[in-house]
Image (tube, rainbow, N blue to C red; front, side, top):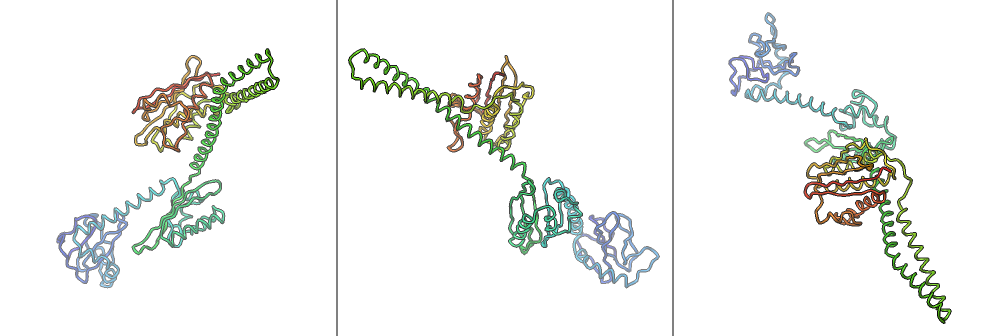
Length: 471
């Protein structure tokens, strides 16, 4: 009888016919041999009555108690011991050669997959832990170890409760352990967010189930979302300030409209009353009529003063202290606020030559409103299905600072182009906008002695050009 060696190939000894069930004599010794180049071992089936054979691929002698080097005896006791220890090799005797090859190939693939998973585990930039059913740490990545202030070797094997107790307050530790216990007993994933030392973490817990739907381990993924939460808070605060500014501006526009519309009829009332009173004084007229006309004249003067205050409020409602403002700093801050919504709309925001611009004398919040309104207009015009971009470029011409907002976000319909600067004009659905952004931007630019214009090609993109005097 010849040796049968499963070594990941069909290069077997002569006399072995692939696909045919081999004769397995009861005196055959079966051993799994581990060699230097094959640490997992190869299945080798040997007949203790035959001479020692060498590995058909490596040329190494079979290092088994049932196979000795030439010149040594092979006691039956050693053969029986090897046969008892290696009964698991019997399936390979009955299997065709291609199945034997597949077993070795599966083992090699499994080893490669483990290496890949290890690389993937440590490449994840957030904390990842694997717990057993008792809450002990089976594995973790470098990020989890760094946040815990320990090494991977120190964490593996420890109860996760001990790890949490060293880095989190007692109440937070109890809350997290309660979540883990909930997943362990329910077999359902869990998601929650908590805060530790000023850092906000978003946790996801996933149970690993066996064939009987029992939880064998739990995967914990913890993501630091502090920066994201802070960015969202800054955006909400800025939008709230912008809404306040819009309300003030709207009130100012309403006041200006009232002042403009009421000034002319009040002037007519005052002049006609004065003329009538002067004529009545020339003739014999009851004093009561004269007193009534004088009272009307006084009342109209009071109304005119109130209307004049409306006009002053319209000019001062949003005025704050002016300063020398760096355009690039304001643009970068505004882009940071809109970065997340731009990313969701597949819009890339870029600036060009803004750092080379001189400072401009104006209110910083007014410049913020201009840049915010024109940038938001481009982002909201994108449909999110294609990659778009908005370029904010700056230059100086004839003592004026020119800002160009050039995008390829689809353009404006020709029928709407003449209305985009009108207050409360919007093409957005109800509740999505109030139509004041571009109107306020133009109001601020004009109030500063500047100009704003627009060029658009529907289906392609839009360019807004803002020209502001330096002082």
